[in-house]
Length: 375
Ligand SMILES: C[S@@+](CC[C@H](N)C(=O)[O-])C[C@H]1O[C@@H](n2cnc3c(N)ncnc32)[C@H](O)[C@@H]1O
Ligand SMILES: [Zn+2]
Image (cartoon, rainbow, N blue to C red):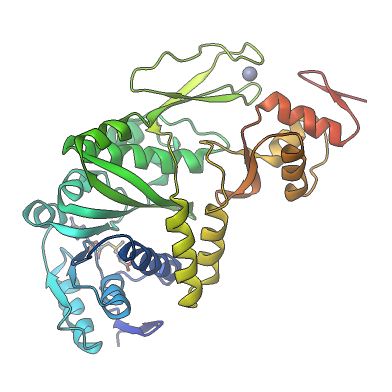
């Protein structure tokens, strides 16, 4: 007996094909994002679910949004099951099934939206997906260890990038993937315009508009760069450019700095798009975690790293206060500050590490002497 799965109104037989109930969240977000994107373009005629497994994502796009969908999987068994699932949902008029290797299909045909959700790294498919997508790319990566710097050589092989594995490694992973997407698009004189990008559990997901324009592609490439980081005091600084001059010594403590990149340093979100996705999620009574995630993303400030509150408190020698209270203190001191979806115990700010430490020490009635708090 194969299990029958109902995800909202779409019912699928799983057979031996891959189905992950924990990613309903992610598919809810795909539907809301496609709905929001539809509102920003004249027409959205074709959506390719490139790595479809049971076909649930493409089927939901067809049934919930009325899109013309191509549902592909290289596995003949999966393709057979997808056909059954299309019939089960009465979606024959809107769905086409293909049984191709993703790269072959992507090089042969073009689609308004290309969705890439492979096992592991999307890197082997970025070139073909970037040629195929006319308006939008949706890309998942589950190879977080190479993206975040935990597997350094794999990161260099897959993404031509040296990420440093530190407190904000989850954001680094998102930015390394976005950098790779921007470079793949730029090869064909196209630009990546980020709509929504996030890290969750063991994967990263990026939604981006595709713009056909060499000038826009040049602008997009200017958003690539490096982050230099001091392991001694936590000071960090973004440096734009493919061959930038980077600081060798920390501005705060003089310790040697480490650079990671190249990665995307620009925005992760388009605010109007996120507002629209947020409304779509609420209207569609979507997964509560998805609503929470987008709610946090749309309020995140545009700074390419974040700080773990507990880590700084330990370094300064004070007990952590409520994170929202500390964010208020940073704002009262004239800095930008927000929470971040990357970690529930972290914050983003444009204050540098010594200002943050000074405000933390002050909140505990101490003064910050650069490397220690004093009563
Ligand atoms: C992670 S699953 C996809 C899950 C699906 N998108 C969902 O939301 O349930 C990956 C699928 O990609 C298929 N696949 C693996 N390599 C492929 C390739 N090179 N071309 C096309 N499909 C491939 C596998 O057969 C598997 O069904
Ligand atoms: Zn330092």
